[in-house]
Length: 183
Ligand SMILES: [Zn+2]
Image 1 (cartoon, protein in one colour):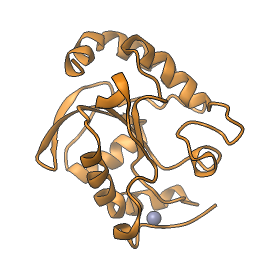
Image 2 (spheres, rainbow, N blue to C red):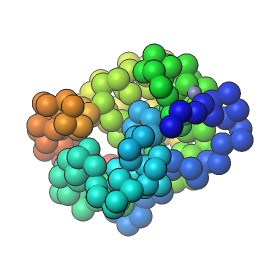
Image 3 (cartoon, rainbow, N blue to C red):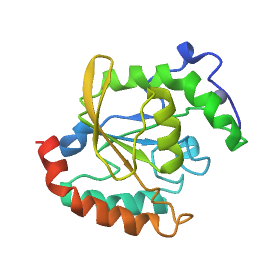
C-alpha cells in the first residue's frame, strides 16, 4: 500500500494511527517512524499483524515496558509520519507535513513521556523541534504549551541486532527516573 496524506493533513482523522493509552500506559506515547505495512496499516492495531500475532518489535518493546506494568497494548502509540511511504527518502518531507497531526494527537492524550523509536525517527523528530535529541537520554520539551519528557530509544526491530539489548540496558539505568515521571 502506498499513499500520501501529507498534502492534506487537515483532513486526516486524528484518531487514525493513534492508540490512546489506558491504565498505567496512559501517560506514555510511543512514537514510531511510519505505519508498518504488514502491521497496523492492515491490522488496525499497533504492533500487530492481521492474524492477531504481535510483531517482533512489539514483543521486544513489551519486554522493556514490563517493569513499568505497561505494554504496547496499554501505552499510547502513534507514528511520526502517517503516510505509507514507498521510499525512505520521502520520510523527511512527510514528517514535516504530518507534524501538525502529531501535535493535535498529543492534545487527545494525557501524556507525560514520549518514547521515540529508533535513531532515524529521533533525527527526523530533532529537526522538527530544532533541538538535538540523543538516544538514551531523557530531555524536556514544550509542545502545545505543555511540557513533556522525551526519551529516544534504539529501534527494537530484529533488523537492528543490538537495539533491543541496548534498550534493556538503558531502561534499567533510567528505571527510577521514568517511574518518577510517571508517578
Ligand atoms: Zn507523505
